[in-house]
Amino acid sequence: MGNTSLSRDVRAVSATRYVMPLREGGSLPGLVEASDDGLYVVKFRGAGQGPKTLVAELIAGVIGRRLGFNIPEVVFVDLPAAFGRIEPDPEIAELLEASVGLNLGLDFLPGALPIDALSASTMDPRLAADIVWFDAFLANVDRTTRNTNMLRWHDQAWLIDHGAAIYAHHRWTDPAEQARRPFAAIREHVLLPVADSIVSADSRLASRLAEDDLWQVVAAIPDEWLGHDPVVGNADAQRKAYFTWLVQRLEAPRVFVADAESARTSPGVGAIDPDRRVRGRRRE
Image (tube, rainbow, N blue to C red; front, side, top):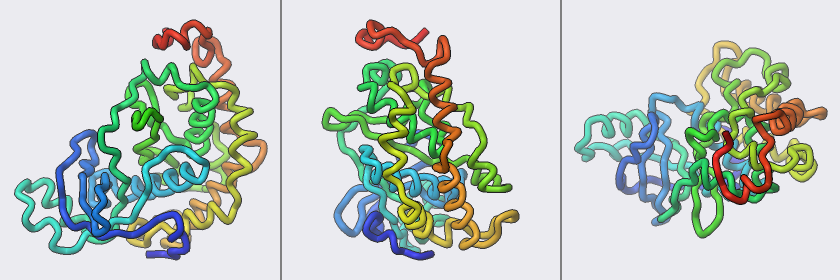
């Protein structure tokens, strides 16, 4: 693992029992019991989507929790070499064998129910704006009407599944330049129609993230999740690329804020009348 100075934000546990697969999506996460007796939804680094998904989950999860969002606790989950040997399903056994070492776990929320697009349209507008800001900042393309990636637990909204964030890291070129690119995909955000001003959300949230916070996040990325990037280089160089991308993303003027606010106020995209918000109908 790289610099583990983020220990105050990310604990490490060992997997003790594979409970069941969660066959929702292509990455085949699993419910795993760990050495602290907790249950975690584990995203495996040996899955077809690759370890960059885990990197995005780690960065988004820690930053989101720092900003005060309800996001399940993120932990490193160590899979011992013999963990999958008694697994009868050959697909799962192969996945576990390919994932020996550090994986990413998210605290399991028992009894949580998915938030669909209809119920999302009744969310508090200020919270909706904050979530839109968060997803725009991290270039998360995966909180849409097709898949909100939100759960209702104890009467509160919880944000999950951030593996599609920071999509620039799938093809690094110039991280600083990539960070300043427009984020047109924010137009598809499920909460955009109900959100209040994204500019106001920016004034609430941006100042909460210092460069030291961002460095601690990327410093905690395990070496085994990074490998060698043909453009950026080794693990340390990749951590620097993530740090540069995040810092430049927050550099004023923040292009993602303008993108989101423009999308929110565009006719037929972000504008909904108060009656529709109360009724909770889908936007037309």
